[in-house]
Image 1 (cartoon, protein in one colour):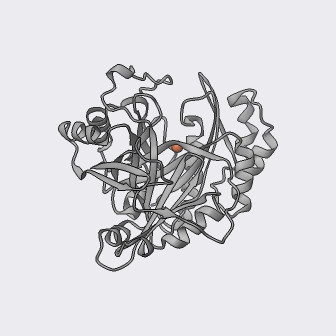
Image 2: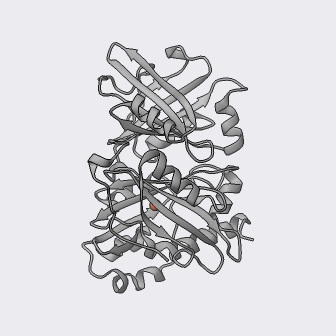
Length: 377
Ligand code: FE2
């Protein structure tokens, strides 16, 4: 078992792939208009931009919603026989693009290709009256892609090709979600180290934490995970693979239902998880529940924390501690019909880890749901 809690981030001078942060996440969904309404109403996003028939597109429509630094692009096809439609038919709704904000999308692309990445999109420049955006793209696990976005010469609301999305419907208030903290990929059997090598070699990431099946197993299911971070620590991608257990692992369930490798969860940060989760719950977001007994032992396990235990217990918020501090987290149920992608809400109070102390309680909660779905066998 190998674990370390301190990220050993590389020195900026040696970082051959500087990344400023997550630029946007694009989800291919079966009904972008309704999905946008859901992310606004339930998750507190605001309308930002639109591209579709009204902007001259013939084959697809995208709604862009925003909350602080998080931008979601929700895209659906407008006709049959498109790559987007085929993607949705195979995978259901899911994340297609994890866009990375860079200063030079041509350099990022050329470097990644030289180091062995498979091309998704050669560098292309899009322009409008607000300037230009250069984008390029490479494949990662499954059909998921990374698009490098260079926007230093752009002052518009999102990107050329989009117009401001004006809607008479009110923009629900933010629930306090601020930025993408980390984003987890589920990969196939024995593929974790392949993708760890990919992120190291192609994008210059480092492995900052590892979990094996001794850390992450319950009576039934097991998984292994390694957390990859870019040089400045703004991008963190844990990568999970299934491990043999008595019954079907949750990662395996994901791979079966997504029909391939893909994004398992998007963790979004808040400064006040109690208020955020209260809001989300009141707007209909469904969360995984751990048994009440979790809270009987929580103070013994994590020590003193600033928050009262009562609201954490009431809302089902989990707590974990590492050498640097503690964190509060909670996981939604899947946000589409297939038991695939879900969200995590996380508030860090010093801790830089991922809630290892909660894995067992959490995975048992997932297994109870798998049992109901009839997929725990
Ligand atoms: Fe997570």
